[in-house]
Every structure is written in structure tokens, then in C-alpha cells.
Length: 418
Picture 1 (cartoon, rainbow, N blue to C red):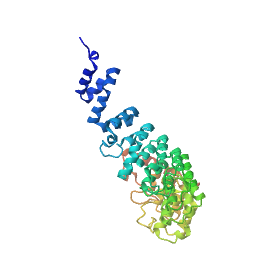
Picture 2 (cartoon, rainbow, N blue to C red):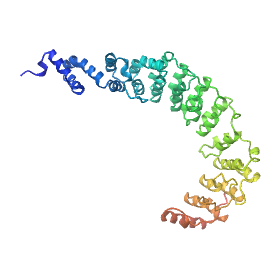
Picture 3 (cartoon, one colour):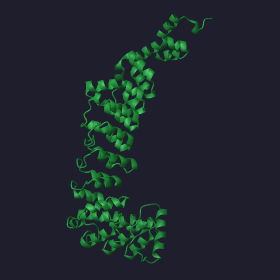
Picture 4 (cartoon, rainbow, N blue to C red):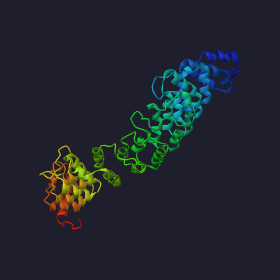
């Protein structure tokens, strides 16, 4: 009996022409002979059935031979044969996966696409390569920057660089600077310059190196007027020091913005001291209650006892009920001091008439007992604080724990070490 492999080539070709795409794909993998004989028919079937999906598969897997074959069979129109969703373009898929050879193969189409349709496929491809940290692909694209006629001052041009800055890809940022890809003073779609993005990013050695590169390359320190606030907001002390060392000052900032940032809780108290260096405390104490309350809060969270004492002595921050006398400021100074483990601040507030019992749901004694801060709890009770654990929200076990700690605290005298 004659087997399939013994049939003449003409008959095998005729059989392959009657197979659907899936069967033909299986047919080509029977043997090398079958593959050589029917592979062309397979690509014709692909071109007829789902060319877009096939070229996307080749881009994802880095199959250069398959991609070239599909382009030969179908022409560059195959690259448009996908649903119109950003991220599905084959060149972006290849860039994301780091297949430099595939990106180079599709690059002429990308340039033609942007030229004819005034699109930004080149920039989006560049951003994909930056995001996945494929420096070789980024370098290839930057070498063809001139072919795409990229406007260095266009907002879209700054997006890939800002993404590299945000992700801390030092080598890629160096490439952007080497090829002078875009103006360093261009805003991205969020309205931030690359240096502003560096300032707004959490501190790291890579982040500081990038900021140094941008400053060294001539980035304008004053074009983005909230540069120092961005650094303060991200607790990026190294970049803030770099900016101040390069003669950036606070002249463009509203002092209320700096005051609000100063009052924000943070782990890095050196940042708070830097912010305070700009604030005119004496001037603030003559302003409204809101500003004085921000100053009070900043003194507590930044562990600045001398400032706290000055504020309490020279300004009526607390009203007759010993609470912040600005209703818009919803915080209890004593509770804040307890939360941050500030016994000295607790004593200063109590000495200046703060209510030891707190107000509403903000109970300094409860916080002190809950956190096991016996010294502060004893001090609050000594100043007349009242507290009933049975009135607290929580489980019966939680209330019982507060009772036990309260009994332990009240058996001992107040520490004289404050």
C-alpha cells in the first residue's frame, strides 16, 4: 500500500491546497520534505486567514525568518491587520520583548506610518523599549531619530525620557542625552520636565545619578517652579540638596505650599529642617490661625521642640478649649505628639493648656495606652485626663487590654525625665 510520503510531489501539493490553516500547519511539520514542499502554501493560508495575529506572534517570539516571510507574502499592510488598540502594533511588541532584529525589520514601516498619518508610533515604541529596559532597542531607535522627524519640543517627545527617569534606567537616560533626543525643558503629558520627574521620584542612587546627569546636561532649574516641592513631596533629600547646591532657591514658591509640605508627617526629619530654613517663622506667627496650625503640626512631626515652644509662647494657636483654633485643621496636637512618640512635645502642649483628654474620637490617653507609651499616659493622667475604656470601639479583649494598661500606669508616679 502506498504511503503518503511516497506520493508524487504534484499530488502532495494538490492535497495541501485543500487543507485548512490548522491542518496545513500540521502537514508541514510531518517531515522536512513536506515542509519544503508546502511551506509556501502555509504562508499563503496565513495571509488569507489571520496575517495580523501571525505577524504579532512572530514579533513576540522573535521569529525573524517568519516575520520576513510574512512581509514578503503580504506586504507591509500586514502590519495594519490588527485591532486598533495601543500596544498591539507588532513593532511595539518586539520592542517590549527586546527583539532588536525584529524592531529593525519593522522600523521602515513605523517611519512611514508616522510620516503619512502624523502618528506617534515611534515614540510609543521607544517608550515600550524604555519600560522593559532594553537599551539595545532604545539605541537602535535613537539612531533613526532623524528619519522620524521628531519634534524635540513636542510633549510626546519627552514621554520616553521621562519614563526612563522615573524607572531609574541610568544607561538609557545617558543614551537619550547622548543622542540629544528631546529638549530637557519640555513638559510631558503630566506637565512635568524630566528633572521634575527625577525630583518627584523616591530617592535611590540611580535617581540621584540621573538628576546629576540632567543638571549637568543643562536642564533649566527654574522652568518648573515646583521643583523643590516635588523633591519634598517624595522625601527625595539627595535631589533637593543637589538642586540647592546648584543655586536653586525658593523664590518661585508660595510660602503656604512650603508650610503645608513642612507639616506633612515624614520619616526624614532633615527634610523638615530644610523646609523650615525657608519659612519666616516670625512672619507666620503674625498671620492667620491656619498658617500657625500648620507650623504647630510641622514642629511636632519634625521633632523641632524649640520651634514648638516658640509657637506656643508667641502665638494663640490653641483656643479657649485648648484645641487648634481653626476648624478647618482637623487634628489633635496631643494625639499627634503621642503617635510620634514625642513626650517632650506632650509636656509642652500640656504646659500651654492643651486638654489632656482630647476631643471627639481623638483620645491621647487611648493612643498612649494602645501603643504602650506608659510615660506619656501617666503624664496625661497627672494633668487630669479622663478616659473610660468601656466607651471605646473595639472588641472586649481590646477594652480589657486598655484597662490593664491603665491600671498599671496609674500605680506609678510620673517620670521626672521629661
